[in-house]
Length: 358
Image (tube, rainbow, N blue to C red):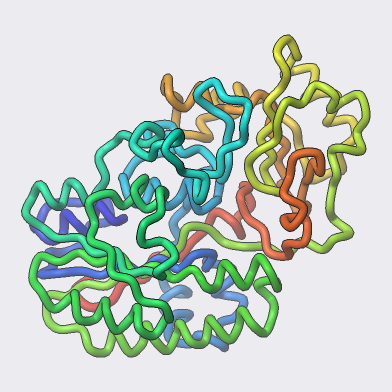
């Protein structure tokens, strides 16, 4: 999508068939799935009218921010850009590496994601890309992973971020990425069905309506998301650490609570482990080998880089469950209400809304 917006600034054909534009803004609302928006249509009338009239698009697997944003910022599938989950094990290390916050001198963004970003491509074509986001992400390693080459514009509140984007789109050739993390944050802590989430949706609807209303000729605006969200009650938690002998061969568990990435100790059999786990799982949760997911095309293929990061076993929640191994997970993650990462329509389907020149 971001790549299509860039191509539209030069009048080039693009996968979204976007018409030529003078400048553009692409808003990415973290966690705003198509189904989430449709279910709260009365609280976001401006966005919901377009959502109901447009076709959804699908985010990549797994339906998690690290993977989706890297795909957004590079135009590549997970197998190509290599950021295959929220957290993974790779490069011969037994440690779990968080793809959003775990960057350091030893874990270098360009080593993990060396592909050219859309922003770098834009710079080479004489266009400028701006990332308008919270000050929290201004110097993060993950920003380097997926938006390398963009100029960062820090603005704390949603309102000030929209104001900055509105100013930047006035200059011809500018491509603006506007990131809204607040709804996802509220969903994790309070649930997407909470009043807090609804209040943020109402604020977002107002901001987008105001921005769309001041666009000038040739200024394009898109709105999308990186994934949807479902709320999971604590009664639907599964604890793999209670599975006894079936999980004794675990070396590490990464991923998300709805898509556990299991890395096994040397010599353990992934197929046998997946089968042993499956015997203890309820309907709506499956355990498969990482090789099975590759063969099914879930990552869009494979590469030498991604193959080394693929887990031995994946425990995947299809219906409303969350899976934890408390020997490895952050204790605070067990308190989350809103979840994503898996393959339900609620998680995979995201809106693609067009305004202005688009």
